Image 1: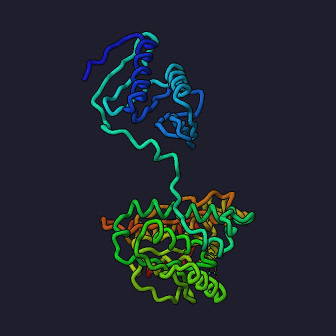
Image 2: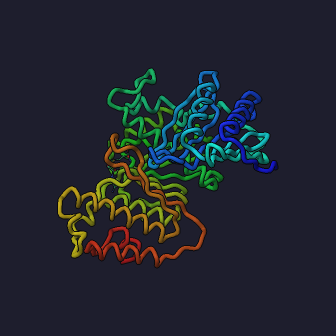
Image 3: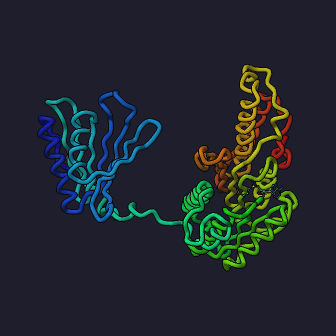
Length: 398
Ligand SMILES: C[S@@+](CC[C@H](N)C(=O)[O-])C[C@H]1O[C@@H](n2cnc3c(N)ncnc32)[C@H](O)[C@@H]1O
C-alpha cells in the first residue's frame, strides 16, 4: 500500500481520472462510487457507477442515490468521464475506484489539500458487462396468457390487460427474489404449492410456469377456489397448455384439507379468507407464506379509541385505512409469533391496483420471543379498543 500523500486537489483528480480511464481501456474496471456530499444543495447522497453494454456500446450506468429514491442514467464513457469529474470537483468529498488490479480512493479536503490512496484490489475479477443489459424474462409461456385473455394470440398484451400483465410479472419477480433468499425450498424433490382463492388463476398459472419452465423445478401447484365456473375454466386451460401438475379444486379456504405444503399463497382473498389461509399455512408449517390482503372489515367494526388516536379514525376513509394497517400489522406480528421472519411491502404501485400490500412470512429456525409479539398485538388492540382479531383467535391467542 502506498503512503497517502497530500497534494493539490486538481492534480490528484487528474491522476484519479487517468486510473479510471485506463481501467476501462484495459477492461479492469469494477465500479466507482462517490460519497460524502460536501454541498447541501440537493437530496443526492451517493453515486454508484458500473459498466454496461447497451446496444453493443460500453456505457457507464450511474445510480444517483437520493434520500428517498434512486435515479439511473446511462452515459457513454467520454460523457461519463466529464460527469464524474464534475461531480467530484463540485460536490463529493470521497471517490472510490475499484478495479481488478487495485482500489483507488481520492479524498477532497480543500482545493489545496487532498489525499489519493492506492490499495489492494477488493475485487479480483470484473463483472459480466452484458448481464445487466437484458432483463431475464421470468415467465415463458404465452399460450396460457392468451388462453386467460391477457395476451392476443400474437403475444401482444390486450389493451385492457396492461395492469394485469404488470402485476403477474411483478409477482413472479418477487417469488424469484424470495426463492433466492430461501434456497432450501428449491431443494425439494416435489415442491408443493397451494394458492388459496386462486380466482381466474392468472397468478397461479404464472407461478407454475415460472417454477417448472423457468426454474425447472419439480413442482405441484394447486389452486383452491369457491367458484365452480372458475375451477372448470382453469382446469380446462391447464389441460390445454399441458400444465400437468397444475390443478384447481373447489372449496372454501377454511375447509380445505391442506397436506404438506412448502409455499402457501393467498392473493386478494377477501377479508378473513386471508386469515384462514395464513392459519392453514402456519399449521402446515409452510416454509413461505405469501399473501396480499384484500378488504379488511373484521376489526373495522370494533375500532374506537379513547386516546388522541380517535382523530385518526373519525372519518370513514381514514378508519378504513387505519383498519388495513392495524389488521396487517397484527397478521405480521402473528406470523413473527409463530417463527416466521416477516416482511410487509408494496406489491405493485398503487396506480395499478389499490390492493397492493404484500405480507411475506419466511419460516426460520432461529430463537424467537412469542410473548413479545403477542404483547405488541395486545397493546395495539388496547389502543384501538379491539376485542379480538380473527386470525389471533383462530391461532388460540386472545
Ligand atoms: C379478488 S379474487 C383474487 C384472485 C387471485 N388470487 C388474484 O389475486 O388474481 C378473490 C378470489 O378468492 C375467492 N374466494 C374468496 N373467499 C374465498 C374462500 N373463503 N375460499 C375460497 N375462495 C375464496 C373468490 O371467489 C375470488 O375468486
